[in-house]
Amino acid sequence: MLSDYHRYRLYEILPGLSIWLTLILGISLSFIRPLWMIYFILVFDVYWVLRVIYFSFYVVLSWRRFRSATKNDWMSLLRKEFPKWEGIKNAVFLPLYNEEWGVVKMTLEAIKKSTYPAEKIYIILSGEERKKEHWEKIKEQALKEYGGVFADLLCFTHPANLLGEIPGKGSNIHSAEKEFKKYVDERGWRYEDIIASVFDIDTIAHPQFFAHLNYMYCRHPHPERSSFQPITLYNNNLWESPSVLRIMAFGTTFWMLFSLARLDNLVTFSSHSMSFKAIVDCGGHPKDIVSEDSRIFYLCWLRYGGDYEVTPLYVPVSMDTVRDDSLIVSLKNLYFQQRRWAWGTEHIPYLLWRFRFHPEINRLKKLKLVFSEWEGKWSWGVVAILITLLGQLPLWVAGNEVRQSALFFNAPHILQNLMMLAMLGLLTSAVMSMLLLPTRPETHPRFKYLFMVLQWVLLPVSLVCFSSIPCIDAVTHLMFGKYLGFNVSIKKRS
Image (tube, rainbow, N blue to C red; front, side, top):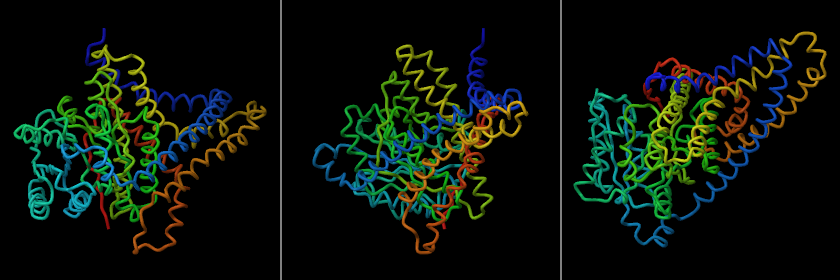
């Protein structure tokens, strides 16, 4: 019988094993049974074309909702429909490491300019003792310029080298939440009346964001049983970023648009909001893992016996791409960012392990949750490689006997037609990227719009090099127990 340690290690191996088996079998069958592999590729490409059409439909649907939501006067609606809105308190957690004051200032300035009253928002800046000198300067500047702007501006320091922690955003937030809880308890506030928003420090909230968030919170029948997930744009430094970074940034936004519209596989990602009661009930954002932004959803889902959801917010927040002054460094930053996101594979063994302690949750709900997480990581790791590389391999290595078959003769034409249909997804991406593009800075010439369209020819290479390979890297580390720490995404603006 397996010990608990070996059982958990088995769970950690399985996601990576499923990806590696797919790739190894694909290569092996291309040489041993090329005809079988050709059949598989044809069937898989048909399936993927249908997935692309399905994906494009929901992206367009979500974009229409986004356009509508940003035009509403949510503050007027909030005042009109929910007279008790003033009883709600908003706390915004802003963990930082080594970011420049200009980045922090833009984030605070955006919150200050919200249509929601700034004097009703509590700002929690949380710096690192590891960067004490830098943190002290940021804290002094923040208090000097914004000390009287918000309901309160709290500055907490995350101690260094605490036992049981992974240095990074999760442990920083966890520490700040504990300190803020003391602040709340001293004033006797109800946790249910506090909306906690956890932002990356480079997050620029849309002027309507907090009004929309409070409206949706007041409208929800059980807001303490829901997280609230906005659309994530990467518009802050998009025009200055290299093409590959722009493509991958838009890809993340499209994935979020798709997930918001579908709902059934929606999990919190990056900047999100939730009731402070849920945070307290589940022990706060985890301090010992990398993917704390999505793990908090799973913690709440298990804590409430599966009675927890994510409510979509179609008013966006905007962040930075991982741009650096050097192209090579920018691409390196992108690779490590994608690998860190793919490290979310660690949720799969966690869920498989925790499910047995929650017999009250329906088995079908458990299966659906873990399948969504697992299938997402499997697709992330293998689809681009299957379509661009393995899809051609059996045609290259097939022997004369196979080459004489009708299937071999027709396969290239069928694959070409399927790829033409799949180009609809590429066309949708190009059009949507132009619709989501921020206003062109005057320092950039008009003809750069052309590059914004032509950049999509780089998509196949980008998906293999900066999506599939980082994902395979992450799941392979997990397979062999080589656990990744939190790497800080360096981001620069012109």
